[in-house]
Image (cartoon, rainbow, N blue to C red; front, side):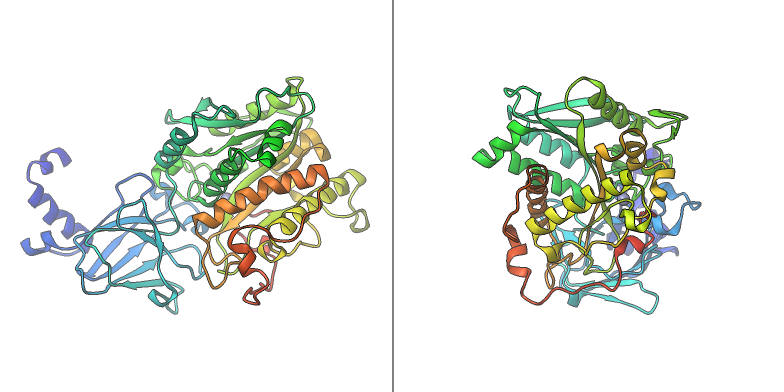
Length: 466
Ligand SMILES: [Zn+2]
């Protein structure tokens, strides 16, 4: 049918416009504004055209699967064409699973992205965002947050591939046959004995793009050629899976694979013999877990820290935060549980010191222990290695994120990557550093503009972790 339509593009456009508007169309409307999401990472549900300049866009379920939870509706990414330049276009975002105010981003070329201003985005009584802007060109891409596609990853890989400190591996493939990349970063001329191994993975949830920018920042720092970077490369092996759920990224999903699997909860193991996963584990999980197991059993130094990188829907001023586990012995936890807690808190404190205390959410009083009975990556690390691996989730956020009144952008997220690398070193080598020495954090922290939230975000339902 589509092939036949393609023979008469004008007719096809008329019919498409009619479909989008949900009513009859005329020839003149074929030259009107159009909305599409038929490109990599694109996503939108029902599109309603009230006029050429007034639109209602409904967020889609992942894979248009209506059985998925409402909270999985967060990501959207569209192209609008044939806009009326000189007249504001109004877009109401409907059907979101999240009530929080945010500023979407837009681009005229899919390369340079800009935040809408707070003046251009309002929220109605149903918590729906309303964007109103006089666009400067007739074609614009608009998204929930800065996109970072699989193509972006491969372009980035091309830009760093020549480094002699970087080994780019493909330990496996996704269900749809795309490569799952692994970056090994170290000074290969230094023997592995005595090095520390750090394991990171990101994009389990496809639309959580923040960690991709953070990883670029980590790598930029490690490959910067400074003496400090050279010492890090000599002392550590970084193993980074930059994009676990590649198929979900390509599909434009928020949280799941094209089969609607939430990979975050599919590290299924038998608690009496947890080293190997059991059951019908998707390759995206099996590849990571098998690689991690290999690092723990190949005779080299064991993984000392495993960070699981995410981003959380939240109120605009929520800053990045971690999910430390368990708590103190005084709170009733065992010595080994309290040991993991103490190490995690110490590491978070190093990040707070390095980034600026106001750039990370305050520490929780207790982390809880139910993760140990679940099937998160951290559940597996705990079941196999207890307090010997500092395994923890980092949640970045999409909003002002500590930079108020500014909204976080990719440069900030890359700076955070450098912070994270240095914090890892501070933690393992017992460095204490002067507060806040990085990027925009310096000028924002301490200027009195930070807004502190009433509650610690892990009590929000996003990751369903304790
Ligand atoms: Zn997530």
